[in-house]
Amino acid sequence: MGTTMKAIMKHHLGPGAELREVPIPQIEPHEVLIQVKATSICGTDVHIYTWDAWAESRIKAPMVFGHEFSGVVVEVGRDVTGVKIGDHVSAETHVVCHQCLQCKTGQYHICQNTKILGVEFQGCFAEYVKMPAENIWKNPIDMPFEKASIQEPMGNAVHTVLAGPIAGKTVAVVGCGPIGIMAVAVAKASGATEVIAIDINDYRLDLARKVGATVTINSAQEDPVKRVMQVTEGTGVEVVCEMSGHPVAIRQAFEMLTNGGRMSILSLPTKPIELDITNQIVFKGVTVQGITGRKMYETWRQTSGLIHSGQVDVTPIITHTMPLENFKEGFDLMISGQCGKVVLLP
Image (cartoon, rainbow, N blue to C red; front, side):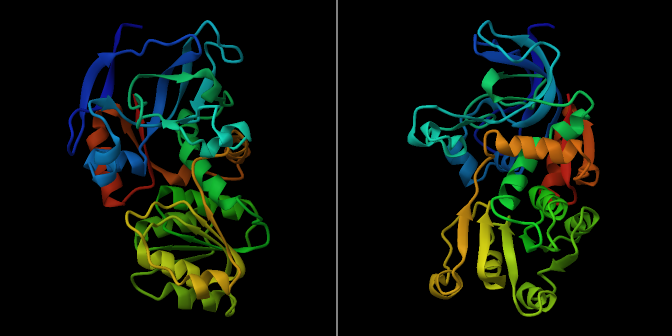
């Protein structure tokens, strides 16, 4: 191992990124160094790459970005126990403070002082990445690196779907980006009786069908509320997983939710949205949940188990793999929407 590595660098305050030679991270006593074997592109990375308003408000360039990965531990700090050189690992990307009220009551996923890999500190679009040992998740030795690298985003889907009872219920997934597609697969594997996938992208609706959607609706071509009511015999769905962030889609999601239903929202609308709270929330008696990150580490255990057991086959979801050097092609695919998960191989 030399002293430098290849990494995708957010090199300036604007669109794009560059592949550069940068120093290999030096670990602290509580950290481990991981040789990255696979790293996948997230919607957040696309925001950083295209340099939208969120990225402009949050990212301090230059920095290495990327936060979804799997790899092999190559160095451990002197205070580290429980992780050893040679372990196959991924990592929880939210580093928490352990001091706030939420951390002290076991709600680490909503820590008030969370720092995120590839957002607040150097990320994993690189040959090596360092992480606190407490954030390491050990992978089964026979789990392929490509599959192991998408556990972090799949954890978002698992957290959203399993935030309430799902077995025997009707479910709509609104917005079938890669995490929405994963949510379809998780809902189906967890015993949902109907899994309705809604999007305007036929490529991604086709992927949703492949992983278990019982009904797909292109909401640019038909009224999704009307169709959902037909499918559910006028009742509406019992669970909605909102992944789109689009104001119209969110309002439709509340309309298609049955009385007493659950709305779990993972999406991040960029602006305030007007809702009919009286009729769509209060009088219907629904539960609305904001979903952020993954429960530490209950969600990781569920996610790893679903993949390793084969109950969720993520193979159709990983549509493209390519060398780290071809990252621009990967980002173009993500921007076009003609892909599932794109995995880069350092």
